[in-house]
Image: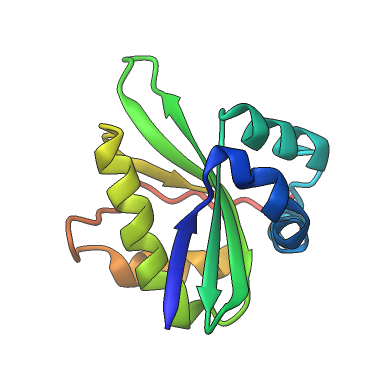
Length: 143
């Protein structure tokens, strides 16, 4: 069974050490550790500026994610998924997307923007056209 948990603010510290290796893996895989230092990630979650998500399979943490609500210059809200790492993605991807999408709707976000490595593009393309999922544009640059 898959459970997607949005960690309540008072519990972030409790779950931080267990989520950290998964978040670090996600950032390292896309060479983004320098953009999002671990100390900054932690502070963003503790302060409530970002959200910590845990994805469980059979009572084991299989993945972790971080999101934050941002604004376009037009002041429209969007939800940014800026770290998502774990194992056995096909087992939990659909449930995770649904939970994140529900959170975005609840918070009146007009879009969900995600950053990730190439493997995530396959998932995004698979979901495009389903349940109001539309890829606005994809930019893939490796430097």
